[in-house]
Length: 532
Image (cartoon, rainbow, N blue to C red):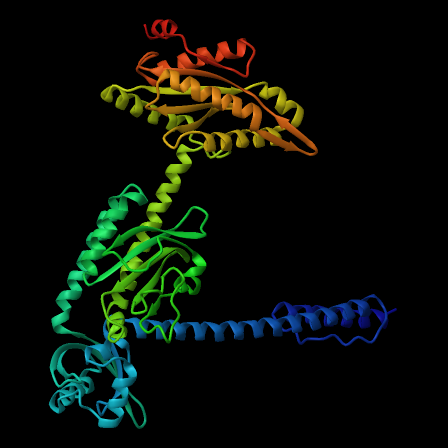
């Protein structure tokens, strides 16, 4: 017994040590398992667990490496995207003044169609862009300070003309070479850039003052014409189903452009990034741009993206020929991207406000307007009818025996019945009519510019339509409903919403008392007594 206990104590100490090492992250630890007793079994289980944790640790490490690799690739893509589309000219050059890499803006600034043409000439000719004294002055200041900020100098364009530029640059010196990286702005265009930014800030201020998306459209159109004076185009937003895009703004009468189209018809929307066409033989046209007879068309589509979600599309057509269209498009791509960013944020904010307003005005079950909106709208229409010496009527209706219907078939079927009746009214009522859910199984239909006689005729048609057409499927049974209606009109039944509701409610009560499934008009004398 005295020999066994120390042996057990050693095995337990080994087990405790292994657990401590595993808790510290060492999954390579193993327990020598030489026995079949309970501690030996625990050691076996522990070793199996460590094997699994080791495999899992290797898998996690592999995933981390893959993530870091993808992140590095994505970061590289983003840097390249910024480099290519930056408004300022961005360059990398050697200490001899030869350009090693430039973006589109830098190439355009020096008069070239694209970066490859500039780089080719720089490789073949050397440094035709720099005055030798200016290049030496730049290198001297870089040697002294490491960086230059707002360095004023001149560059020579491909046509021999000279432009004044402002440079920001930094030098990186290796064992054998020195690399200079930086960006520059053309001095005479700085004022134009400031005007653009000022205009866009001004537009943003006006958009922030708008109360709805619809109110913003005229502002967007006005500033689009100012910011893109030599272009025509339009702004398209998704419909409520987020499937089709509809034109909400246009300027300059764009050519061959559909006013409504499916999201699959635009390459920019499908790819989630700008798409330009300046040569029909190289790139296909978007489906929403009619090719015939516009083979000459040059255009740019830029998606409007806010918080990772595509809201719509900015479409721009520069007034350019196909010969110089590519150069012209590149000139405006940077501005279009900035303009799209401003629009996206403002429109996302306005659409959110629209959604909040809609939630406060509509019934969540049926999608109809609620009682609050009904009263506000009716007051305005009654005032308008008084000014124009016209009539305004309303119908109050109630689903017959709806409580019993709910008790028999359940509330889910009752909700389905409410939605069916709401859909029926939406299809049968005039576009100018406003349908509201008043509460429970009660509805109110507002009828602008409608006399009492016409309102009764409309109500009778709706009452008959519910009886004959509204059907609710429940398992293998087809259920039907009827409604009772009361009609009141201004000015004969009163000059306020409350007066009309009281009159219509009294008529509805008579309709239900008379056997239901019928229409009753409010009595004029009872309405007048009610007002008194």
